[in-house]
Length: 397
Image (cartoon, rainbow, N blue to C red; front, side, top):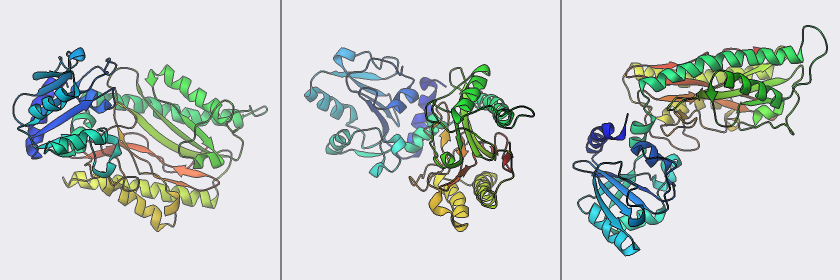
């Protein structure tokens, strides 16, 4: 939906939240959220500060530098211009005079750093003008993380392709490491990354970095990235983790992001099975917390889903080995701007809104191996569903 089509909804949301306005500000593209929500070109040449105010009632207002006076011309509203810093300060004071309580891409104490884009000096100056600045985190979730029908459809397109590629990827490892006849083919983590990447390209997918293939102790590094020079060989008897993500290679498509684990040529050890079962139970506890809340039409915040998941792992005695949040928002970027399932790295009070997508991916990372089980969920007005295959046992490769 275009910004112009969203303007009435934004102003209604501001009134509902008891806010006087939403102030957008940027310099040198330090706030990419502003560009996406306002529909501004993300590659525009921006060398001077600009400000755009959406009031709860009335016409939007702009303040731009004279040498970049047209920078916000695609947006509705009146325009003020400045050249000197004195003009900027007086122009901003005039533009904001009727308004007191303003949302900005700011987070008190940097608690939700994903939306903390405004510099401290700008907030200080606005305080001097008598303005109260509050976080726009919930507004950003509402107007950026909520997915269109087309974006949700694209997620399922990516899901179908990636689920199939992952299953075939595990089989490819088996064909190379444990061939039906002949000697094993020397295969590294990086080799399988290349195989997966080529398969995704054939399916018309695009992605950032990755995918990730890691064996044994490397699977305990939750952000491990194998390279051609430094990756491990995959051998019979190894423990294998594959994390794979992508979206259809066209504008405004939604990512799909999953992680599975398996063992090569053997049954899992008792410890591997115990850790895997614990991770699965924790994942399912988070899924249940979200699905129950939606079925009951009860709001649920990201931190609450994280707590439901993390308790299972802590109660099993593995709490210290679960070192990251339970999940992240997913959208046109792999880590989107909506609520994360997090009460570890942040206390994420943002709600898991209808028509949003997010991962559920608990992990336990011991020194010798790590298990993560990642699925994605999409919400509607009255339910939340897992969007792809759900791993229930370690893959036997």
